[in-house]
Image 1: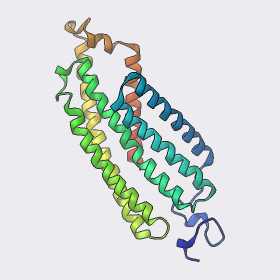
Image 2: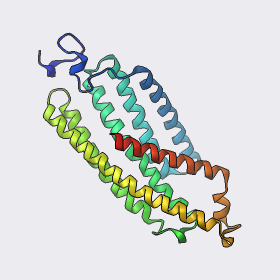
Image 3: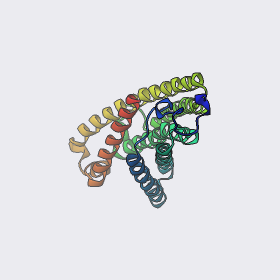
Image 4: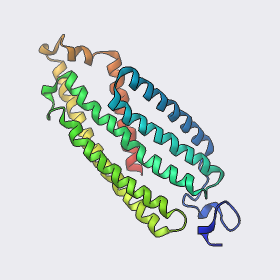
Length: 236
């Protein structure tokens, strides 16, 4: 039997011959599917409640794709030859962080506007104008790669490899964009921290926001999300 005719695990179609080459862990798949499912609903509800629609759209789509990707991995645990589940997990998990990054890029603009736009090296409105098109380019390249890899599946190794190369190129481009974003974010953080120590900053709306407990937690959360996504992209 040709490997392209395999539809389930058997003596002629061992798990080692699948694209993944192993059974995805069921426990982790269920755990992350549930976690991202809860976060998807939470993001959507908070976005509607707080009227942060643009931010919520990117984040919710990213979280939803993560959930769908892990559902695909759950299905692959029972049958690693399931081509539909493979296509779902490779496309969804690859593309999800790109949408999450959209929300991160929008955040820097509003942080700079509310703290002190004057000390930003570039006008705050340019942050999304620079990074959103760059992020879209990453998304397009990765989507093309994911489509090619999924189309190649288990029957066309050459097409699958071409898709994988396109995915790697898209992820590499995303690393470059993320690093540039990180540099600008870190630069603004250093500049605003110095500004908040000056006498003229005391008592201003930006100073009050900077020392707000909720805003501090938000800064830590955004920094953590950035680091995790950057590590993920470098790893891939």
